[in-house]
Structure formats: C-alpha cells, structure tokens
Image 1 (cartoon, chains in turn green, orange):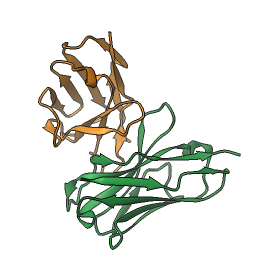
Image 2 (image 1 turned 120 degrees about the vertical axis):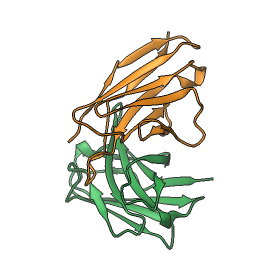
Image 3 (image 1 turned 30 degrees about the horizontal axis):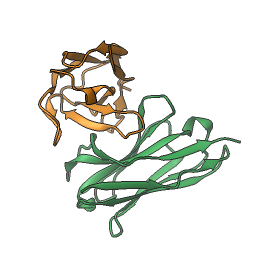
Image 4 (image 1 turned 90 degrees about the vertical axis):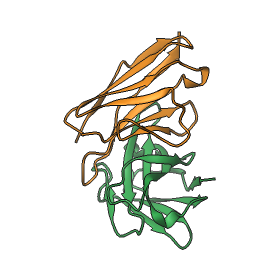
Length: 123
Length: 109
C-alpha cells in the first residue's frame, strides 16, 4: 500500500524558515517524480514544486522560486521541501504527492497524496 | 500561465442523476488535463488523467472527454459518496507551470 506521510508543519513568523519532510513507502520511490502541492484554507490547489525520480531535475512555481528548495533522499525514501523567507501567503496545508507516471520525463499528475502538514505564517 | 476556469461553481443534484462538469483552458492543453475529487478533510484523489484515462480503481461511472481548451467530467449516476469538490488540472506547460482550476462543488439537492 502506498503511503506518504508529511511532517514539519508549524507556526512560523514572517521571514522565517521551515523544512517539510515526506516519508514514502509501498512503492519504488526512486522510480517516480515527486511533487509538493499546497492548499490555502478554503482555496483551490496550487502546485509548488517537483523533483525528478533521480533528483537531478527540479522545477518550481513562480510564487516560490528562489525561496523554496525541493530535494529527495532515495536511500531513505524521503522527500523534502526547504522553505525560506516565508510570508503569510505561504500559509497552507502542504501535500506531498507521487507522480502517476513511471520513469517519466514529463511528470505532472498526482496519483497518491499524503494527508498534508499545516504551515501557518503569522506573527 | 495557463488559467483553468471551471463551471458551474456549484452543482446541486440528487443521487442517481447525471453530473456534467466543465473545465475551460485559456489556451490549448492538448489532452493533458486531469480531474481530482476532494472530500472535506481529505486529500485529493486522482480520477482521470490525459483527458479520458481513468486512474487505478476509479469506477466506470466517472468519464472524461475533451481536448484543446474544453473538457468535461461526467458522472453518469451520482452515488452518495460522489458529493464533493472536483478540480481540473493541466500539465501542458513545460517547464511545468502545472495549474488547477477553482473547483466545482457537487452538492446534494
């Protein structure tokens, strides 16, 4: 059974930093691209970032480019999101999501999601 | 950035009725459109990708159609568990600017 479990969400002050983690199990983690997707309270979904299955290619939404860094450890089956220079607009539930395609060079759909970890940016 | 506009915002139907949800893209996304279902307090669930391919384990009452800029998700006969919010999502932009629509809420009439 595929499981994705996020952690690391807390209340942080504007300008602060945070690292989110996602523990993956139940599938060959190193064979799939992985994503972070966020959802502000009462709002739609926003894709944040993706990392290729080998970790050698990363992409970001314009809203987080230059502030967030995605990474992965395929030896430990973990996905990470380092978040810097946080603002109130980053307040959201952050989901870790697995790409639906195997070994793909064009990822972009999400077939398994964690339950999310809540990041609140507030003074 | 490709903008996805979903309509209607809310759809009020009874169990057993047919639901037709629309998603329109601001420019062509070919067939690279997906649909997700989200229930309160739960993570989204992938229903359809590449416009018409059902994801693993998705019942046949869910079907997707369309290409270019106009897409439809059809639920042939609503079950009680189908009342939820539905989002469309495109992956046409590359490098990816993956975007979601604003959602359609399907509620019990």
